[in-house]
Length: 363
Ligand SMILES: [Zn+2]
Image 1 (cartoon, protein in one colour):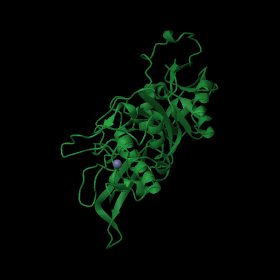
Image 2 (cartoon, helix red, strand yellow):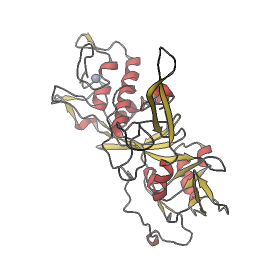
Image 3 (cartoon, rainbow, N blue to C red):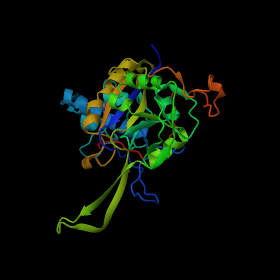
Image 4 (cartoon, rainbow, N blue to C red):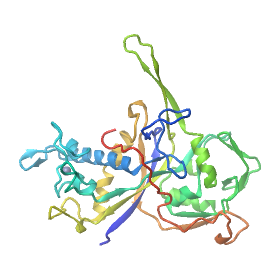
């Protein structure tokens, strides 16, 4: 049995998603979202994903077995095995048992200095933008870039002009938001299309794809985020409070995200000398993790959940693909001739992590 397995997850934002950076920056928006420190493309940190997955798996297990006893006392999975784990008042903390599907899969904390804890059998990467919806005069287009497509195992070559690459040639330039770009044909566009269809990306999105170079991707994404403004209402007067206007940004509805979950072989680990009995293979760890998906679709991820934000529908959750080459330039026949020759293929794409704010627990 392998020591670990990697699973690719593709998700569609049913609402705008706001995973806050936990601080204000100078600019037009007060509450900003987490961004990749290098590309500046917004993302959902793996720590936020791990937190919501844990909560939702605990809810799912609780629904199956609400009166679970531990050492002859009631110790329900939810809320005790969800959350941060340090006992406080009524909250008992993580049960830390080798037969607990929540504590073994997501790990547990023990003691004030967290000594004796367990790291957990599932690891989460950040969720990156794979396809991003942008308004154009011809209706919405979902843009992507070579760096984004590397997440789904596509190594795209020849995207080196400041242009929009499409399946078919077109004489008129295309506006992506405020940016007007010439249109050029990508020779092997169909390969991208077919791969995304294999990952259950809906047809209405696959039919409206547009490929842009990495250097433009970040600009286009950042200038087409959803920005909302809210104001606090004074309950006594029913009027807006003075000085209580605030704005926040979010990934728009229709954004397609990709993340990986790596599951470890439970057989390699012991909890206080005992064999882990809740799960016994990397596939079984993934089966437990997947229990969170219906909750993710209805309860969502990130902040502003009561303001119509956060629902994320998982379209695909299966083994990560092998890498495939796609050549976009008509002139160059070999990938090595491309001036924007990308570095050695890496399965994870851009996975640089930033110091995003931890967002564990219930949304
Ligand atoms: Zn537990």
